[in-house]
Image (cartoon, rainbow, N blue to C red; front, side, top):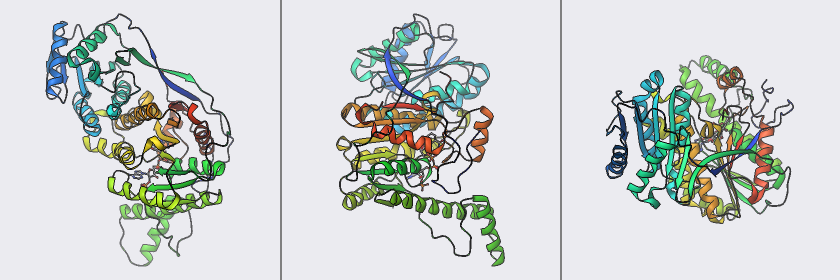
Length: 493
Ligand SMILES: NC(=O)c1ccc[n+]([C@@H]2O[C@H](COP(=O)([O-])OP(=O)(O)OC[C@H]3O[C@@H](n4cnc5c(N)ncnc54)[C@H](OP(=O)(O)O)[C@@H]3O)[C@@H](O)[C@H]2O)c1
């Protein structure tokens, strides 16, 4: 069912492309159902954990006054029927999300085996369309959705509450009201203007539109020299001839003269092993893997630059870890000197560190948040996003629906979705979109993931079909929806 593998990194597969499912995510007002959240009223004990004792006090107090048996604790005891994690109400992006998932990891075995009720609290303004930097704390929805996948018999709810507008105690009262009347709605925002839940609708992007991007535009593209982001910007280059500055960590290593060119990792490792043996060198399998990965990364970057140039675009690759603020600043300055002011941003840098919640560590969350979230913070500090005409984030269906093993990745991508909403509110005439991709036939979907998706019956996004859709989205202009879900075969509502 997957397309034939192309011979080089950025070549489109030859198999006919299936049409992609494209859906726009919105947020609509809904009345509560008037039903209790299951498992709270009859809970022998509800444990409440949050990073800010002053805020915790108000929430615990409001819950106790409503007759719930709740206790503030440092770590889940394993004895409670329900757990409330309030890490999204305060604090900085990485700490808030890492704090929530690591506390939850301590209760994960109980949730897996016995179910229970899990409530996650965050504050991005209560509408999922933040108007300020609380957007950076908006990833707990991704954790909730993933927890629901991993804890099949539990009730999991994420509530986004505008504490800043209500004040802590009234906000706590609103949350208690939601717990007593909101049923098991998975994701609810509460603001002064109402109660909001996510909605989804089929969306058709205009095809092959031209005009809003041209050779005078310069795009900064994180992760743009490799993977699926490269395929996307190559298509955009073909249609627009814009200039591209690509950021990535890999160096462009020269290909060894005594090894035949290949994009197949296994045969390259074999050739490197034979060469080492012939010269009497001892190399470990790990060394061989690293050498092969470096050479293939270099080839992939060279091929991307050649493809951009063949498409009629100017392109430059800068080695920069986007999680390093100084490296981003330097790369942005030299990009502007080289090609003029940056007019567009594509944020595609990302890594995976998949593990079930019960095994999740703060270190894994930090690794996943590094390129996606800290990287984006660094870019937003280095460029004036209000002056950009086009912004695209590479998000994932994992944020929208959750995916077992990807709690950190789902949270990081959900943060991108919230930040896109924030930037759009500040710059409504720009094309700003967070693309919630389903799995592609390429990039981080390696052979083992490809086999897993095949087993699950999930069709992969062919590279050219995804690239076409990306270019259509960028050329759709300001009307492009802020949150899209594409090829969402993982979806189940
Ligand atoms: N492929 C999919 O099925 C899929 C599905 C949903 C969403 N996405 C998203 O699409 C984006 C691209 O994914 P992909 O599949 O193409 O992955 P990939 O092949 O692993 O490419 C990831 C890219 O990010 C760059 N990168 C990673 N960490 C970085 C850092 N700290 N600083 C700068 N660059 C960094 C990598 O370059 P270096 O290694 O050279 O730094 C590479 O160019 C990701 O954000 C991913 O989450 C992909």
